[in-house]
Amino acid sequence: QVQLQQWGAGLLKPSETLSLTCAVYGGSFSNYYWTWIRQPPGKGLEWIGEINHSGGTNYNPSLKSRVTISVDTSKNQFSLNLSSMTAADTAVYYCARGNSGTYRFFDLWGQGTLVPVSS
Amino acid sequence: DIQLTQSPSFLSASVGDRVTITCRASQGISNYLAWYQQKPGKAPNLLIYVASTLQSGVPSRFSGSGSGTEFTLTISGLQPEDFATYYCQQLNIYPLTFGGGTKVEIK
Image (cartoon, rainbow over all chains, first blue to last red; front, side, top):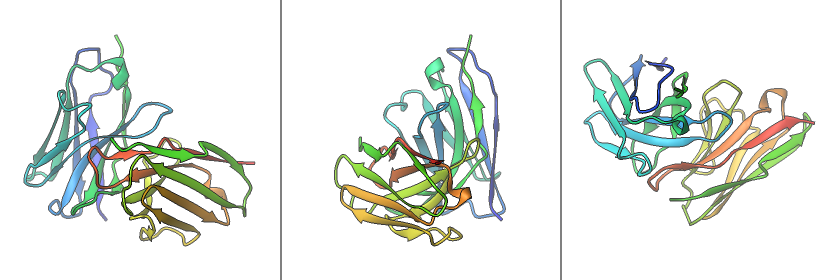
């Protein structure tokens, strides 16, 4: 059974950089787009960006200047870095598996990591 | 960006009711739409993709329809475990976007 397990730092101060990692257990790492999505408390979902096993990326333009998504195929892991965090970035961050092809839906999700940003 | 507007944003229903949620896109997206269910404290769960294809393991009381700019999610015979928040997502125009959500609560 394929699972996504994510981890990373919790509470951050303004201007710090968020770093999260997501590991894929029990399934193929190729042929998918590995994705980060966030959800501010009590609000809706925002797509952050995605990466494939070859390292090809797509980012949300609203975050592109601050986001880096990377992949480590030797460990079946992918990571999110989001720099210059502010209180507006407070959210639950999810990793997710996106299907390959011309359209993208998310059929497998990590457990989510709440990242508060506060001084 | 494609804006997805869900209606209603909140609805109150009883077990056994037929419930319909609408998602309208700011421009045509063919059938490239998915629906998710999210329960408090949990990650979203994929229900339907490309407008009407039921994800494996999802009960058949869930169905989706629509194309272009207007889509619907229908729950035929609401069950206690269906009380949750539902989101639509457009699948193929970057940046990928989600609707604002519809919370289904017990009447």
